[in-house]
Length: 287
Image (cartoon, rainbow, N blue to C red; front, side, top):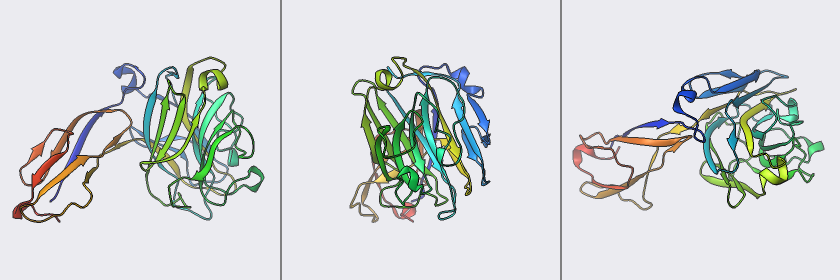
């Protein structure tokens, strides 16, 4: 069965009018560059490079958010560096230290979800590519500013510099004060902290953005606001002629998906997100 999935998603951030998002919504610093409507390079594969991309519109941490991105940390494992971070801050849209600072070090007050691809022993890094939740521009894992991690970025994999795009999801629950980080649908780190009171001095309005850096080693480091159409089948599904097949939507998007369009390749077209049972026929057999 050949399936084509098309989605239309309107990316609205914390009540910002749609017209504001049609225009360029980001401030770029340093080596950062825009590659397409929703995709940005933070660092090219060059030494001593650093860049940041900040959304112009502040959001309120009194409201929950659930953002999904796609990230790519480059293709060089042993010789690649240094990493990227998703950052919240109140003061501005500046760029922190390069190299092992990952564009985050020195930004305070702040919260950073840091993906570090270089082993810095002086910062108590593990040997594998790792993820952590840090505050106030500090990247040393032995200090109190390290709220969660370090852990493998992708579950079961020491290397994230694999040329692949990975889903990177950040969820903030303003009621429970729970901050969660998911990579490729796996929960990788979480922290419970009142960000407004304990980090930002009771100021709930923050800028959000990404930063990245290189130093004596480098990698092409990028991110996109996610719009990834996917579907999945039930476990144990048998694919035979005349057998009903159940599939469901497993798509990821930075914003709220408004409409679905499924073309199953045999003349069947659907516009519902809900799980569907379809009948495998010979002309529409699985391939």
